[in-house]
Image (tube, rainbow over all chains, first blue to last red; front, side, top):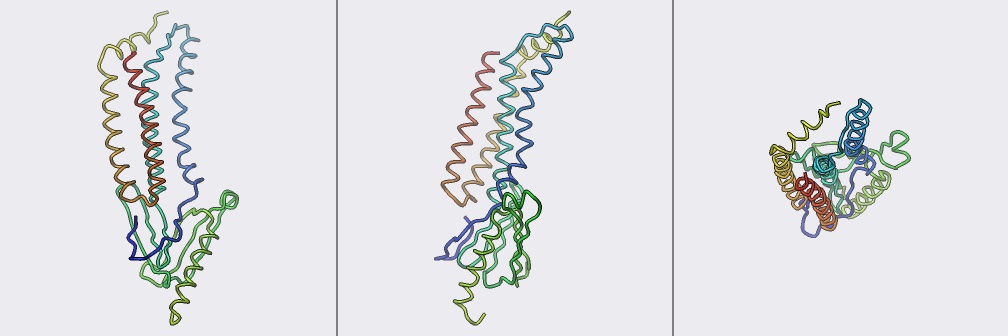
Length: 175
Length: 75
């Protein structure tokens, strides 16, 4: 859980779109099916060469089970990076948590009253169809711009940010 | 025609290579699972999501490990 101030409320969490994760795991899915294809192909190939090949199902099951276990672990590596890479919008601030691998994590925070501009970028057919895109928040802080890539419903997230910004601004009329 | 594959199969079944492979994968699994558990518990935001993910991860893993173990015992 990101560090919150006493009484601070989480309004929304924002992550990348599931399509992006699916595209990253597509290679894992292909690898999961490859042993079945190659096993059958090798048996057919040796059979055509005239060899009598006995089916060694136990050895294949052993190797394939371990192969799937390794791919299962690889899938959760992708998922963990996806899940822990998140923006947390609270009623006071935004927390940008960037998970860049299992042992590289960066956390940036900026107060909502520091926001200067929120930009949404939706690129391509997939982004338009599945409703994901980049959200860029310009701030008056040292870090200047914060970006979340391939966020789901970026327009909706932008609306939430601006609503919270207006509430903070109304509460502090001297801004 | 000679069955060349029999040599390979007899080597695999006679030598301890399969138990060694199994042990190596299990060690990797334990290490990676510990790292995942640490990250999920320490940095996970939604406890319900984390619980579902943990159950899914371990149940499916046990299924794969069980399959490998049964196959190893019947080779």
